Image (cartoon, rainbow, N blue to C red; front, side, top):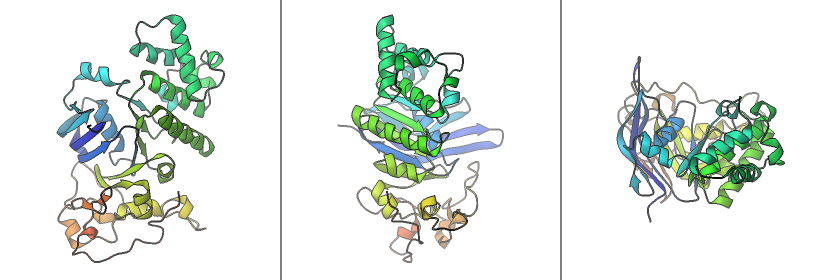
Length: 338
């Protein structure tokens, strides 16, 4: 049985006045039915561009340069808009970062969820449509749905708006849900509620998910596997336990050290020094080398391959080469509690 989603050596570029931005560079990963994969990394590392590339929601200035995208074994790499419309909502759907901008302020919440239902069930009766809308709202934890479907987005709290956006995304019973930093715009208490809701729905419905975030605390709460992205590439991948308790890439060490839980009473959080490189002209060798205090001479000359650590865990760092010196991760660079 093929993977539900399989991305092979995908490269995507944006063509801008400043030049060609290589937003996604030779990325490969797979997703099984019912699995949650977290894409983590700093802003601008290519997480959202990767997800939008798969759903073909890129602007006209973007182009898939190479690689392939297989969904349920079918190659959709070069699908046009007409074919992609048949897949969006049914095969995969997306929940965006800011629910206020994802919702139309001039339409009631119920009307917007009903609109999503009607796309997939064009011949549904008015009564059945109302029932299905209420069912979806109740599914995502919106109580008194028949009353609240008449309200407008500004009458909902941030958490309730995100629940409404999630209800619309689930209208077509998608097999894969892309969640693009869905808790960033919410306060901490509501974030926890939405994360619990995502995980509960994913388990009940059997939906696979790709969860995009820069918050490793979120990863520990919802994911089965983790892919760490930097400068448009996946630099480490493994199960949550492997990446949290036995990280191997220096970039992953830095992300873990920056967690507030590891501040240890210090006045300030750890910050990875420097800035990510421009992807108009990516640096030679390892893109993280200039920010990596453990960089070797070869890091500035050759890009490291993905070295296997276990059958499920690998990392693209020359530190895993048998010839490299043995370097232990810094304090706080691993063994993070879930």
